[in-house]
Structure formats: C-alpha cells, structure tokens
Length: 126
Ligand SMILES: [Zn+2]
Image 1 (cartoon, rainbow, N blue to C red):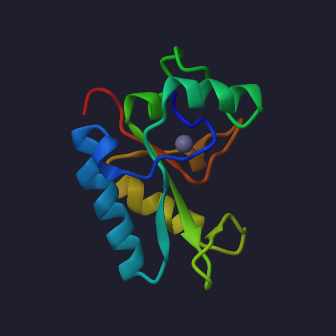
Image 2: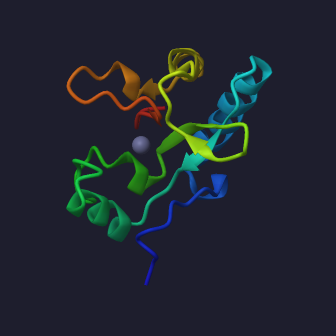
C-alpha cells in the first residue's frame, strides 16, 4: 500500500522525456542563483485521490489532467537557507517558470483560474 502522505522525489519515476528536462530545469535555475529542487514528481493514483480528498488538488487520478500520475509533471520548489522547502512569495518563481518554458514545459504559473507556481508538465505529444 503506497504511503499517500509522502511526495515521491525520484527523477527515475518520471516519464523518460521529463527526466532530462527536470534535471536541466533545476541545474539552469541554480546557475542563476535560484536554489530549487524537485519537491514532487510521480504520484500514485492513491496519493492523487488523497490530495483531492484534502482539497490539495482538483483532479482525481483518472482525470486526463492528472499529469503527476503519469509521471509527466514535477513540482519545483525553492529551498531556504536552512535547506527546507519554501513556497514564499519573495522567491523569483517567474524566472523559474520561464526556464521551464524555455525547456518546452507547460508552467502552471500561467494558469489564470488556479495558478500553480511550482507545477510544470510535459504535454503528451512531446
Ligand atoms: Zn504539480
């Protein structure tokens, strides 16, 4: 039984096309002084549905928009000076988003209804 409370951070669980891009995104951001890391990648269907149940996600595992379940999405989050994950507004999320877009990803920060600054996904035709 998967642990629905734990975010999976293994690059190897991502779709092959996204593994390289995710590494490049993190490396490029860091060269610009943006200290980010892979907060979450692949999600089990059980975790995806659990996140829905607690209102942390709006898509259930069987929804085509559940990119994490297919290993086609990553949440890239800043690390603070103590090495802890940080969603603070003072970080330059915009620039990280642009780097992801330059690498061919869709950035959740562009979504008008429910912006998701940490979220990037690789569309199916790539
Ligand atoms: Zn996400």
